[in-house]
Image (cartoon, rainbow, N blue to C red; front, side):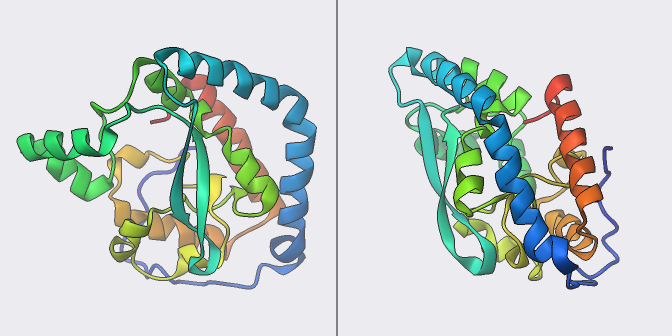
Length: 220
C-alpha cells in the first residue's frame, strides 16, 4: 500500500467531510485501546533503545514543538537521532551545499543528513525513533493515523486547512508514500484525501502498510 505523489490539479481543501461516528469517537477509542494492548511490548523496547542512544552521553529523548489540531502547539517526543548541535550544523551544511539547500527548501528533509548519528540512522530507517510518540497519542495530542506532524515554521509552506482538522498522526498516507519524491506542500493533498475518507478500514490499512515500511526499512 504505497502511494505516489498526489494529483496537484485538485484543491487541497476538496471534500473536507464530517466523518461520522468513527471520525468523531471511534478513532480515539481505537488509538487508546491499541496503545494499552501494545504497552507491555513497546515500553521495554523503548527502554532498550534509549540505553543504546545514551551510549554517546547525550539525552535519550528529544522534544520539539509541533502544530496540533486547530493550530494548537504541543511537544512531540522522539528518541534522539541527531548530534547535540544539530541546528548549527544544518545551517553550516546548507550554506556550503546549494544542492542540499534546494532539497531542504523543497522537502524539508535531507536524504544524506549530516546531523544524524549512526544509531540514529538505524532508528530512522526502521521508524523506531517515533515510538515515544505513543505517549503523545495516549494523552490526545496525536493519533496513530493522521497528517504528518508539522513544525511551527513550516506553516507558511502548507497550503489549505486540511491539516488543522485532525490530530497529527504517527503514521498516515503521506508517511507510507514515496515521500522522498514529493515536495512539502504536496502533503496537503494527502491530508485532504485522507480526511475526505476517514474510516476504520482505511486506518487499519495504513497501520498494516506502516508495519511493512518498518520491516523493509524504507523510512527516513
